[in-house]
Each structure stands twice: as structure tokens, then as C-alpha cells.
Length: 338
Image (cartoon, rainbow, N blue to C red):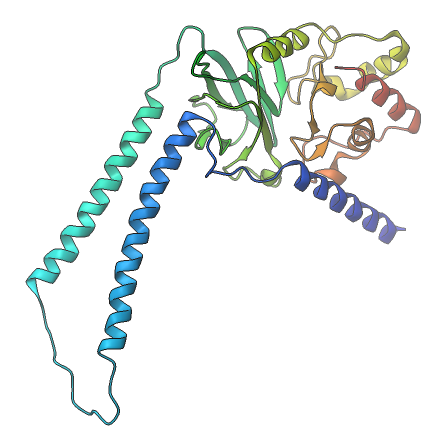
């Protein structure tokens, strides 16, 4: 029996892990779609070019020396011994210093240009809070709260739109990284940080936590969903009202509110007011569950609620040991929260 249970759990982890790989490929740092990411990209080209030149010069000289001065057959003479050359020593001291100086100045210019950007009056402000192992996004100006999927408007030449992120951590150090939109910026407990993005193309851009933060660090994934101004305004409007209560799932609502789920999760318009886990008011409007690990469908929602540890081992949501009736009712209720 125990062996069958272990094999079943292993199979579940494997299947959902495969789902996660298809849902969340690695973002391409060499395909920037925002000003900060483009600045990092241009700097990386300079660094790679300099390093490639150094490699070719050193490798070329080494290859030439090996071929030109290789020992000839039956040649027992000792080669000429050179004990020092002021010109060579000055060259291999001054040239590396100049290279390091140029790269340092170029890096400082890019870093300062990104960090010194000031928010405009119409810039979107979002508070990002890192948790083990999920992301919380709060839009203080419009009173919207969501998880793992950051929605922002696209920035165009005609209408630039900047999004400024205030970065906080609820537990340990994390790092926010959406490779195609920006560089990495740490979220440090009790030390708010900041960054900004200006996505120049609509679409979904993948990211992840870039600072080891515990067992499920690799599955602390995020999505930045860039929308047209009209679609973004529509998304804000749909996520502002309180959760809609469907009379047909009233038994599920009652069951959900009777469980300890309410101590960790919030559902607006109900007594569920927890802050430890993601806000569930518009749960089914999201594309994924478990911070990007599995797609968000009724079937995967049921699997997650039944045993979250089988899908994302070590996550802080316990197995609630719901009986079949309770599980059906809770899933039916949560699946209506859009």
C-alpha cells in the first residue's frame, strides 16, 4: 500500500512538473522588450565583445608560440632565456587596467541611468511582495490585489507608460527578474527596494525569483502580462469589485468559510480575510496555480486543493484532509471566483 502511494505521488509530481516546463520556459535575455533590459543587453554585448577579443588575442599568441617555437627533432639546445622585459610588463599591466576601467565606467553609467529614473505623475505604481514561494501584487491606487501575474499597460512612443515597482519581502530574501523587461532586483526583508519597467510590446513575459529562497525557489515563477491601455483598464475594472457570490454554490461557500482556509486567504465580500496566502477573490481569472507550476483549470484546482504537497512539495499550504463532499463543494465555489 505504501509503495503504491509513493509511486502515485511520484507520478503526480512528474506530470505536474512537465506541465510547469511547458507553461514556463526560460525568458531570453538577448531579446529585450523594455528599456532597462535593452540597456543591460547593450552592456552585455560590449562585455562579450571585449572578452572575445581578449580570448582571441591570448589564444592566438599561445597557438603561434606553440607552433613557431615547438621543439625540433634531435634539437638538444636550450632555448634563449628571457628574464624580463619592461615593455611587455608595462603593456600587460596597463592594458588590463584600461579594460577594467572602461567596463566599470560603462556598467556604472547603465546602472545609474536605470536607478535614477524618476516616476512621472501618471506612472503606474505596484507593490510587489515576495513570499515563500509566490508573488503578491498590490495596486494601491486602484485597490486591486492579485498573485503571481503582474498586469501592466504597454509603453509606446506615442504614449510612454512606466510601471514603478516597490519591492518588499514577507519572509526571506527574494529577487524579481523578468529577463526581457529588466535586470534582477532583490527583495530584502525590512528594506524596501524599487525598480521600473516600460514594456514596449504586448504579450506575456516570463520571469522568476533569482535569489535562492528555500526548497521551492525554482518554482517561484511569475508572469508579466502586458496589455493595451484599454485591455489593462478593463482588467482593473473586472478585478476591483468584490467577488461575485453565485447562489448555486452557496453550500460550497459555506463550507469554504467554515474551514481554516479563511485564516490564510482573502475573498472580498466574505469573512475570509487572511493575508498569509494569495488573495482568491478573482482566482479563476489567473492563468496558473501554485506560482506558475500548473495551469489553472477546475481539474488542476481540485488536485491542488486535495494535496498541494504532491504538486509543489514543501509549499506552506497544508493538506486539509477534505472528504469527497467538502472537496467537491469547495472546488465548485472557488471555480466561480472570476
